[in-house]
Every structure is written in structure tokens, then in C-alpha cells.
Image (cartoon, rainbow over all chains, first blue to last red; front, side, top):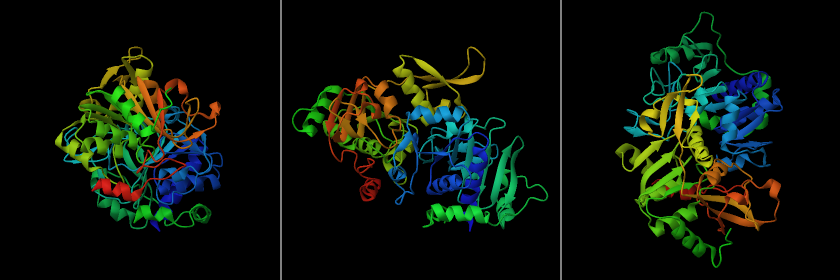
Length: 241
Length: 247
């Protein structure tokens, strides 16, 4: 099931990143919160979880109605204002899972609109934190529910997030698989079953699939168990329908 | 701070009339569907002050109500949405009227912080290499004067008035907020005049206060003052009320 594969992978990624200095993970969707909570059970026990912009919660619960408020059942352990999360991004202590409307071959992101900058044919939400996330040395995971040519493009219409700095960890998770951004562009780390066909249908993203790229069908039993433990109702699946 | 004599809603209306003139720069706190000062914004709509410059980090009901009333000349925000897309915001963006200035969350926070520090502008790393400077005159890409590295010079944005809604205020006027503070602490320091509405009165517990009374000019008890957005832990967003606004 793709929701388990992608949410589980995100959880494993957060655990690995926490061993390299990630201290706080900013969640933006139910699946990213499930991944954060699972990561705590998989080895990142001290991980702080940020919901929205600033509140770092000791032990959030799943948002039953998707409301941000439901994240904060026990009260935040740290809350220093909107500047705090940006400081953590700049100091390389943060990670964030984002869902841009467009992501391109060089890692630029867009959530402002479709059409020319400042004159959108279709206005979307706005740049939000994409410019700040993308420019930082911290971890950014792009989490997309579909490997779609509408979202994955050669160049975004409006550059909200600029090309990430060299060496900054940037990974893309889609139903096609897991992809890392390097100097040469996107490169498959592993593919989901059928992922090669999905990648081939979106040539604009310019994904390289090295020989011997593994196919991954499911996360490890340990990761799956952690997902079920923190999300027995399966809220993560609503994001990948 | 003024305790808000008489009925709080009446006192709030008087405070808004006193503090906000046509053309004022008005900032609203909260973020997205959390702690929007909706009761105060509705009063502002009734008051009918025109040509407002509206500033909000992440907007929702606040932006939609003021746009719908035709009172906004210019909007500064990093993003606006209801449950889904916000129709009046979308129309403004696509029609070019009223003017919408696009920010990132970090850049808008930096512009407000600059105002609180008495600066004309401040430097910010993120946003170079993006389309934001092309569409936002408050941003200019320059070479850092010390290192030559590209940075954005962010012009300060100083609200005349900030409208905030929080769960609780104590008798001294300190504000308490158990959930996400978003940019409210920055707004309280950047604005010339800060008006807070709140759900309930609590005992003084100064070390726990999210915003010190030093930064708050007036506070009014208005339970439910954020609806249909939520105010943790008192209530969550009212999905039905939000859907009505979106149609």
C-alpha cells in the first residue's frame, strides 16, 4: 500500500536525519505527523515535533478532523515565536515535509499560482514557507500523492523555493518511489512497483534511474508496526487516495 | 491597558474606531484556521474604514471578510486559504485588484521584526533566486555589504494596529496561548497599537505568558471571538462555518 510505503519511508528518513543533527520535524499533513510519531518509536525518541509554525509539542495526538489545534493535546514544550523555526532551519536542526503545487527538475518549488509571476491564471495559496525551507541547509522532503506531469515539471511557473544549496538534503517521495536531488538533478534511490512507468510518463522532471535501482514494495515490518501503533485508524491513507 | 469598560463588544468597537483610520495598516494575528481575530474583523467591517493595508502571515477568514466588504486597498501575506482555496483572495490575485503583495513566512516575519527594531530594512537569506523580488517591491536583491553574497534587503513593515485573539488574558493584561503562537509575538512588538481579544480571564502566571502586557495596549473579553476559526484549547475550527464562507 503506497501510503504505508511513503509514510514509513518518511519515518525512516527522519530517524536517519536525527542521527545527523535533525532536532525538530515540522509536520504539515496527517501523514507527516504519523511519520514523525513513528520516527520517535523507531529510534528518534528525542525528536521535537512542530505543528504549523512554531509550537514544539511534547506529545501530539492525531488531528481527528485535520485541525491544527488537535496536534497540541499536552501543550507545547517550547514556543519562541515565528522566528524560532526559521532559526532552526538556518542552523541545520530542522526538517520539514512539504507539498508544493509544482516541483521542478532543479528542485524549485511553487505554491503561488499557475501562470506568470504576479499575474496568475490560477492563483493558489501563496508562497508560504517554501522560499525559507528550500534555501536552508536543513532537511526538506517533498511529499506528493501522485507522480503527475501537472506537479512535476521542467521549470515551475512561479519560483517560490529557489534551487536548493549544494549538499542540502532534499528528497522526493511519490507513488513512483524515492528520489534524491543532486548536482545533476533527480536520481532514483528506489522505485515502487510500477515506478519506472510512472517516471517515464513524466520526462520533464529528468529523473535518472541508475542500473540496479532496487524496487521497494513495503517498509520493514518494524516500520509498519510503528505506523500501525501511532495511527491505528489509518489517517495517513486519506492523503494518498 | 484598558480593561474594556461596559460591554466588551461595544468597548471593542469604540477602540477600533479610535485606533483605525481610513488607509491604516492593520495586521491580524493567528494563522490559517487558528486564532483569527474574527469578532474584531467583523466590527471593523461594520465600522467601514476604507483603503486598509491588511497584513497577515497566513490568512483565512480575516482576509476573506475584509476583501468581501471592499475595504482593502492592499494585502500583504505569505498565503491565504479556507478549508480549500479562498474565493475573494483568489479573485484579487487573478484580477490584480486589490493589490496582493506576496511574501514568504520568513520574509514577512523579518519585515515585521525590522519594524520592531526601528530599522528601515533588514537582510534575509531565503528568497534570493526566486520570483518574489519581481512581484514584491519590499524585497530587493543586493550584495551583502561585508561578503558580497546575494541577500534580500527586506523593507520594514510597521502595522498601525495589530488585532490578536488569544485563549486567555490575566488581570494585569498578559496574554496566554497554549497552542501555536504563529507570528503574534512578533506582531505585538512591530505594531504601534495592539488590541487583543480573548476567551477567558486567568490567574496571573507571568513566566507562562506568551505575550507580556508590555506589548498590549487594550484587551477585551470576547468568548468565541475567533469563530469560525479555532482557538486551542477552547474550540477547534467550525468546518460548517468555513464552508459557508468558501461558497
